[in-house]
Image (cartoon, rainbow, N blue to C red; front, top):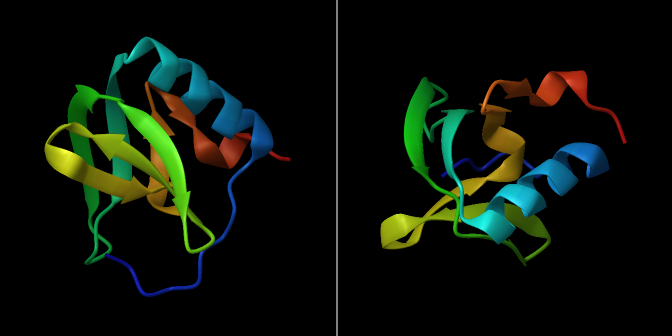
Amino acid sequence: MTTLPYQPISCDFHSELELLALRRTTIEIRYRNGEGVETIEHAPLLDLYTRNGEEFLLLPNNREIRLDQLISVNGLELANYAC
């Protein structure tokens, strides 16, 4: 898990994630892991939630990814969205 301060993501990108979570869609997730290495996974998006002012997505087996560590989801690049 990263120790950098949380940076909120785009509201529009968050809305895209909410729709995928509502449908429990299996997604391709590109993100930076705790060591800062780009990682790609395929998994169902089960939920989005906030804890201590940080937002996370929830994957099976209680795996979580902090939203500001995302690079893209299903080819949608976080960098292309602005709030």
